[in-house]
Length: 148
Image 1 (cartoon, rainbow, N blue to C red):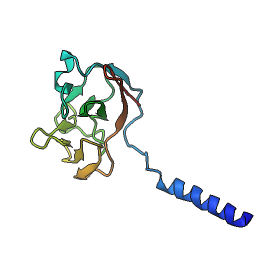
Image 2: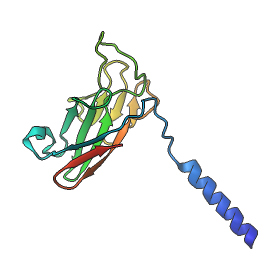
Image 3: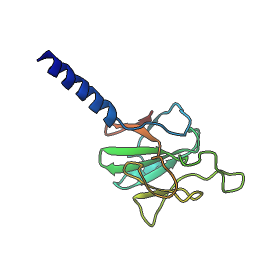
């Protein structure tokens, strides 16, 4: 009986380890700990569900996209494309990921053409093999904390 219990335990450990997502990202690790107030007039575009803003000043890499999923949930993504983080197709200015206003659930990279779903950062089209780098969010009804 002990052998069956051990075998079952080993099987469960193997199963749990094999189900973990690959957390590799070609983007450099940066410390992010930002607090904003999405219901304020400063972030007017976040006042409604489906709204988004670009945070660019004094933030890591090329900035952050913040999207309001519903009244109490937000997602935040790095604006650097994980396909080729060092690619700069706009001359000296490296491009940033943008929300496609024609298809509001899509984030696109103007350089490589990769498309990502704004709800979870998954790649839906293009050459990228990686999802967007997503930051954690915590909203208490007044302030939104974005952190890694």
